[in-house]
Length: 146
Image (tube, rainbow, N blue to C red):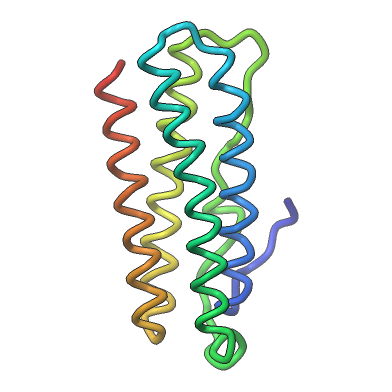
């Protein structure tokens, strides 16, 4: 992904959609690679959650399409908020769990920062806060499973 400053609501949502697609692919790959059935189930749930989140983001974008270009956004950088989404070759369950927890933590930070930047769209900001809350909970679940 190319480094861009996310200066509009539309750019923020597109970035979020791209990240959610990448994260879902990571979880889909990781499901079959882990040996711990509990971790596998958690990753499967995160994969399905990602599919729902893409639909949520598409709905939020559709409902706020008229505001997408009206309000400028500053201080939201794609490089700062892009999680490292790499499925390490031959990784054990611990590495997969740590990678997933880091992804969830980074997504939490992004969605909270993005929600603050788009507070002029209260419903959209609230939707991003809900996504952030889910990321925080998932990170906690992954850390507690260690």
